Length: 175
Image (cartoon, rainbow, N blue to C red; front, side, top):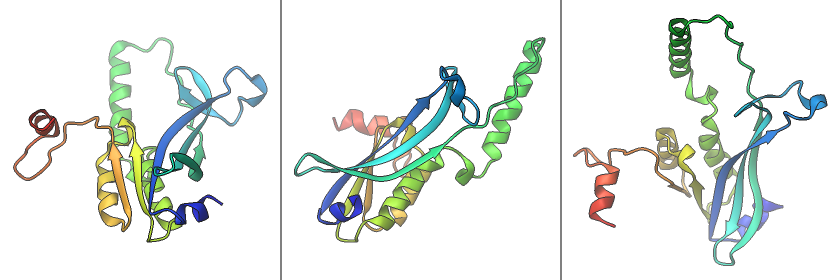
């Protein structure tokens, strides 16, 4: 079992990534799935893959989440540009008002938390996320966990401290 193998390690890297399982061309599998982007139809799978950095070996999957998106209603064919603009503005407003735990991006925080609960306190886990995982809630959650760290490919020029020093500015001074 993966969690038992992880407990033998002092340090584990945990790669988080999302995969789109597109079944759009398989007619028998279309029902029950949802849009995956770029016209695709299928499921979305987020995985947390454990790696032993000292040995350079994959240990296994520590966590996965599978879901589908609800299909959006098709806009009327005669929709004007103004009506489209208004419809999209309302959709953005509704998305901003949703609770974070109800958003797809919650999967990044969920992976951190679930892996922390599976791994013994003697193992330090460093999660590695791409830019999609660069969300404030990830950093907030890591601060609350005991033996979890995170390395994220930055997507946002965040403020680093109360003096408003920005991430890109700091990096340009400290290459």
